[in-house]
Length: 368
Image (cartoon, rainbow, N blue to C red; front, side, top):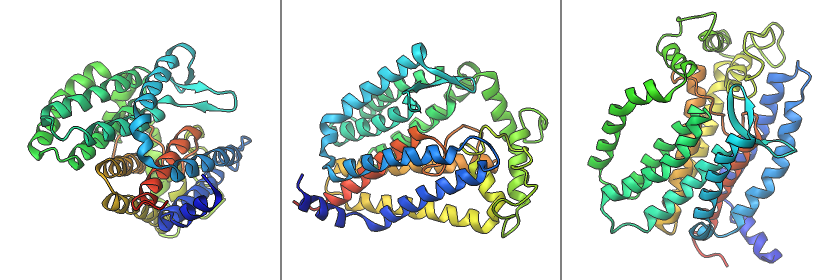
């Protein structure tokens, strides 16, 4: 790819989407620092190192025609399944879940690659199976979902499985599956929910659901984190307590130090910057997702549309579940906030997803 072509593709980037990505990424480093500045470990510096890895990945994916998905979807999906299996043999255990592989320079979470591979494979299959019966298309997609989800649930990492169904549902709808089939799928899922809860969840995961239904249960135990998150956000007022303000719940240790820069970074930010800051952050994510949906409307083929919708729903589900669990709207799942939460694995996959969106935008009108 020559320099002139690279320059043309750079100018063809979706500028609002690109600016929002950079702004949220920079904000993420600030948020991580503001959540952990009183501690010895420089998590913000580690996030910068991951950013230096992820930005070239973003441009590599953005500048290459997304049609590579037709060849790469199956290998990436198979690689993710292999890595999920390897986790059980050489994986690193963190907070009770064996979900990570040690790469030497950091840990990598294969479940993040798995959902990315799932989106690619869903898009590839659904874009080439219009003549197939809708029920068979749904069952095939559920089969694609089942293998990694079972492996992720065994780790156990419940949050990593919850992302799959919203993504699949959105992509099936985009692929033209009739509503009656989708409603049937939802009803079957609801009917199976008691079985999953009783036989598929660990005791602490069941406790999270009970605490979600009633945060006042076990306030000194399982309900401690969510109650302190509500106190932190609720005590901030409109303007918040300010950056490095003394005697915040985060600084005093009421929010667990192990997760304030990952799962509960929104709680810290809400305490520091109040309703206004929290609203602006949500607005930034809303604009990012709307940009992604606009890319979907401009895609040149069904493959591009399906990829765009799948990526947008992937990012939306993480955003909704992460912010929702900090304000007791959703159960605690451990899903990170895209571009903001600390963690290299999800940052890498998020950048790859946004790069794929840019590729769909750049190549919507053959720019060569």
